[in-house]
Structures are given as C-alpha cells and as structure tokens.
Image (cartoon, rainbow, N blue to C red; front, top):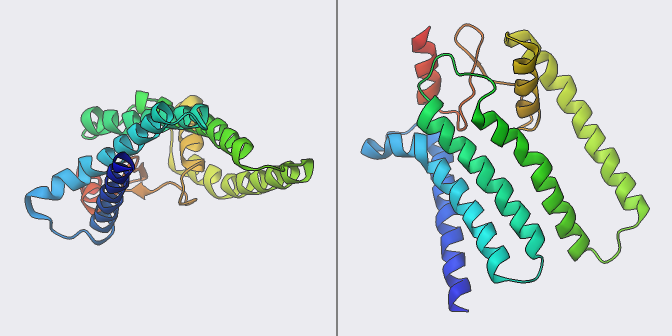
Length: 207
C-alpha cells in the first residue's frame, strides 16, 4: 500500500508539471530562470516519467504485464524522440527530416495500438464482431478526417523529397489536436514537440 501511495504522488507531480508546461506554452507567462526549463525540458520529464511508470507497472504487477510493458516501450520511445529533438535538433535550421526523433515518434503509434488491444482483451469480457466493426468504422472516420485536413496542408506548406513529405504527413496526422501543421515565418513548419510563444518567436526571427 505504501508503494502505491508513492506512485500516486508521482502521478500527481507529473500531472502538475504537465499542467504548468501547458499553461506556460499557452499563456507565455514569465517564469523567471525556470522559463527555459519549462519550455525545453518540462514536457520531457513528464514523458520519461510516464514511460518509466508504465515499465514499473509491468515489472511489479503480473496482471496485464505484457500490455503495460509494450505501452512503456512506446512511451519511452516517444520520450527519447523528444529528448533527442530538444538536445540535438532544437536550434538547427533547417531541421533534418527524417530524423531519429521522427522514427521514434511515428513508431510510437503501432506499438501503443498493440498495448491498447491487449488491455481491451484483458478487461472486456465480451468483445464480439459488432464491436470490432464499430471500432474499425470509427478509426476509418478519424483517418478520413485527418487525410482531409492534414495531408493537403502539409503538401501546400512543405517541400523536399517525397519521403520527407511522407514523414511529415505521418507524424502530423496522428497529432492529438487533429489540427493541421503549424506554419511559421515564410512557410516554415514548426516541428517543436511543445509549441510555445518563445519557439514561434525564434522561428520568425530566423527569417
């Protein structure tokens, strides 16, 4: 019980840090000497911590172990992509595409889908064919919406080799916001993992 209490506190700390990073990104308030930490590393701490918690869950609890192990691998991979972007690619102009971050970000989705399927299989006692069909229809509807909104926007605002464009489409089509890619300056794609007012200003100043 004491161990689970510690996990709950860690989850609370990560949630508070995520809320603080989101507020800083949206409002752009002055956090003093902590501003650069929130902007560049706060979100990475949340991602790494979340992935480590998933892996710890798989190691300590036998139930649903495979699902949580796979989920932890997916989240840690996404986190490593963000860390690499922050440490290596943040100040590069132009940012190479594809990069190791792109590989880790795009690779997250098929891995986490497997984890979700395993969790559903373990927790849903009755999962008949009709539910599978409903899920497939919902997935196809979301994919169609993403294609209608994202694909043409990426094609209109990015250049480069076809593989580069494909990577941008694959990554932005899965963004939780469902919004088209952010364009800053002279049709420059903002590929920062946590878009902020400060990051957009930097991109504009480069122009």
